[in-house]
Image 1 (spheres, rainbow, N blue to C red):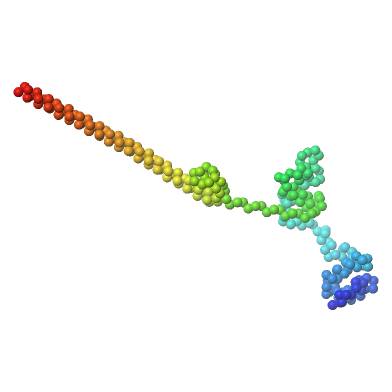
Image 2 (cartoon, rainbow, N blue to C red):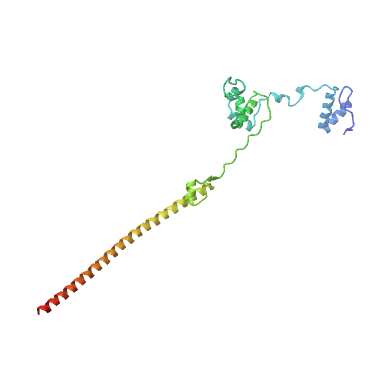
Length: 230
């Protein structure tokens, strides 16, 4: 390994030691490139042609989009980005400025801007990752009418399965209540009929007693008349 204190001009330049430069390249490439960049910056060595960079030709390869970028391009058609960035409407309300100023359309505006970057209509900048959609809440609010019928507080929340249970319990309770009311009505009718029969029997008994009393008095009168006649 070469001495780290070896000056750069010993490694690069007109009178450099090629052996030392090769040894540095083979043993410590980061230091080699750091030193070379420094001597190029100092003007002691001409920069390498860009085409000597192994990645030089990659700049001519077709651009490859990430999954997130493809998602944005699929959501925002090309004619939308052209409308806002190449041929904005004059005098119309559907302008990029109005879109950016609308607080309800910030997510859409960000996607339009990102799509314009991806299509090369405006300079590229880091594209903010799209927020993950919030997971849907597993809870639903029971309607107030059902809360009243089930004896629950208004605004009560439960799962979809819980809501089905609430509705089933309401149906069962109301069916039993209806049966009880029908039974009570039937019982009341029977009691009324029985009371009417009892009253009718009592009335018959009273009439029978009156008839007996009349017959007894009549017999007494008949006996008295016979005694007088005799």
